[in-house]
Image (cartoon, rainbow, N blue to C red):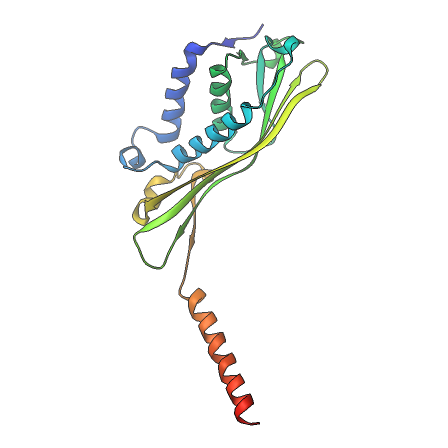
Length: 212
């Protein structure tokens, strides 16, 4: 049997995640607002908690260890894997680290990141921006030996907050692209162009009726 994680490792896992996400000298660590990584972790936790609330494991597989496997490539696979392992441990499941030693009766808990990222919208005036973090996941539970699918789900969670514009750069993570902010900033052209079109149309209509 492969190495099995116990509940006592949860705190250690949280410390590891915190160090990976923030770093010892990150400016976001001293900012009064959650960093982009903090916001994404919270969105992933919300999504997984919501999905696992409907998880039903058959009696014959209830005591089988779980091996977590990522489906597809994504830079945030490691983040989802850590959060998923923590959530499963909180629910009393056993997690194996190596599928080759897990045994034929072990269960595979696979996940795929469908979408993940951070967007922020800022108006023409004002010092704040509306930030939204999103996480969309596909989860599946099947047995290693016969590939029977016992449960699967797709879930999306969004989190929104309001942060100062001058904090956008500080709160994002330069190392991980998925934690960088996609800023959707309004410009004056969005307001000027409709006004120009309306003015031109109004002038044409006036000329049309005045020449009749």
